[in-house]
Structure formats: C-alpha cells, structure tokens
Image 1: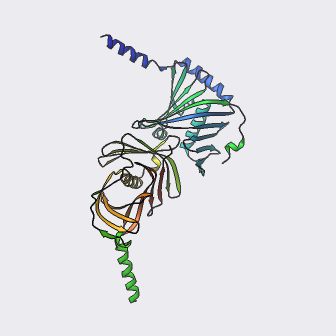
Image 2: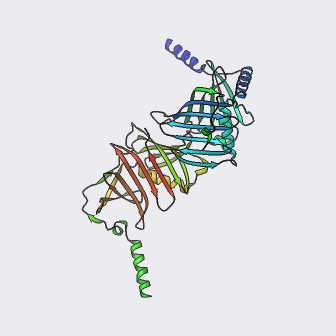
Image 3: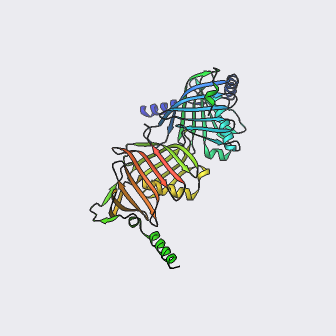
Length: 205
Length: 202
C-alpha cells in the first residue's frame, strides 16, 4: 500500500514539473519577451543540437554558432563534427556544405516564409502569433515553456510543434522541433551575446 | 546494304549479350555459396553518415541514418543537417514501409528507386549463382528480388553492379573499409541522374 502511495506521489511530482500558466502569467511572459526582443539588433550564441530518433541508441550531436542580425538575417554555422552553414538572407537560402556553395531562391514559398519567420521570431523570442499558431504556455521551475502548433495543415505535416524554453530573463535557452513522427530535434543555446557588432563578412556567401 | 544489315545484326547481337559476355568474363567453377556484406549488420551500432544526394542537378545534403533493429529489420532515415526528417523508411522481413516522407518528394517512382537501392545496401547475404574470372579478379553473379547483380571485391572496395541488357545501370561502392565499417559508400545511377554519396564523420 505504501508503495502505491509513493508511486502516486512520484507521478504527481513528475506531472507537476510543467504546469500550465494562468492567462495573466502568459501575458506577463509575452510582455517580458517582446520588450526584451525589441532591444535585440544582433545576437550570437553557441548551440548544441541533439537529433533524437526513438530507435537510435544515442542522439546525434552536432554543434556550432548562431548569428542573427535584425531584422531577418540568420546564419546557422555547424562546426562539429562537420562544417556546414546555412544563411537566410534576402529571401534566399545560402548553403555552404564543406566548401561546396549553393543557393536556393525561396522567396515564393509560403512554407519557407512561415518557417523563416518562425526561426527569426523564435531566436528573438518574439513568437506569439496566435493567428498562425495555437500557443500554450507552461511554467517549469524558473523557466517558461511555450508550445506552438501551426494552424496551417500543410505546415503541420512538415513540423508538428515547436517548444521554446525561456529563462527567467525571457531569453531563449532551448528550441525543440517535433516531427510528425514524434522524433525531435533539440537545440540548447549557450554563451549568448547581444548587440555586439558583427562584421559583414560573416553574412557573405 | 549487306554491310548495313550485318552491322545492324552485330549491334543487335552485342546489345543483347549478357554483362559477363560483353566484358569477356570467363565462367569458372564456383565453390562459394554466398557473399557477405557486413556494413549494416550490427544491431549495437547507430550508423550515421553525412550524405549528398544529387538528383537531376539538385543537391540534397543531410544525415543518412541506418539502424538494424533485428534480423531482417532495418530503419533508414534521411534528415537535413538542421534535423528536419526528409524520409523515414522501414524494411521488415522484405516488407517495405514509408513511415514518413516530405510532400515535395513523395513520388512513387522515386520511392521505388530508393527502396531498391537501400535493399541492396542493407542486404547482408547474397546467394552466389555463378562466378567469373576477369582482369580485375573474381566476379560473382547474384540475385536479389528479381534482379541480377554482379559483385566483386578488391583491396580498395566492394562493388555491386546492376545491369540491364548487358549494360551497367547502377553501381554500389563500399570503400575506405575499417573492420565492419565502410566509411565511404556510393550509389551511382547511369540510366537516371541520381547519385547518393555517404561518408562517416565521427
């Protein structure tokens, strides 16, 4: 009997690790993140990415640096265990795959516009577009976790949901992209610096 | 006119000749019963490759992941470097299942080509039907499904060739081999513009 009580207690504790926010708390978070995001002109951060596939023994780990410049230039640069970068700039996707360069005009793709908008806004933390997404807000110890599910069926078939974790200061510390198959990619940010000048060469292709 | 007829007949004859005949392979007595290809045979290992897929002038790059989940049970997933899954296939007791594929490439012709290619990749044992002597060593004739393949091995690489009308159509190369791991794998199509190149990165 005592064991059963312990188990219930444990389940209760686990379940309460992430609690849904009240309307007022969600509004507070939005306000904090938006005001914080509005001050960002440039952002640089290291990241570690874990690709999780249920059937693998270990997640696939890659890492690199993220560079963002307002309003919408983003560069993901992977340096370990291979060199690969993708630059979103002028409605074009510039890829440098271990020295092989290519570009892709994605200006006419609605899906891409939505994806890029989501990436930019999630880096800045400003992703509360309730016209496009169904958004749910959670508390998790001192952090906040925001779950976004696209209302667009086509987009949902591509990415099922985004979970973004903010620290107490309203900065993005983790991004999780969940696939329609429930496998996911988790990106953890560290060494974040904001509004330091970034040389144009960083965004040259 | 007679020469034209003879030329046409010659052309017809050579066009119909088998791959071994065309290449002057000499049939030999075969003692070997099967060929082993161990490169995706360990259930303990997560096989992860950096992949470049070139299809009709477009390059798709990403991570190519293979996992053996049990006997005759493999999962093959291709994702972009940023983690987005492009396709996710299962092979279980010769039953092929598409678990996921992005809409843009959800075409049955392409899926069938990939299915056949990957079936060769994960096949661990091939029955030997015949064997031949060639300048480059011994060539083994084998069959998978309804298709005939030719296997050969040098110090540098394992090669499997699929032919039609005596002509090479697909070439599978396993090179930079270290124990049971092939660090470089290529699937090269000659009939269509498709090339899949895989290499390890850890």
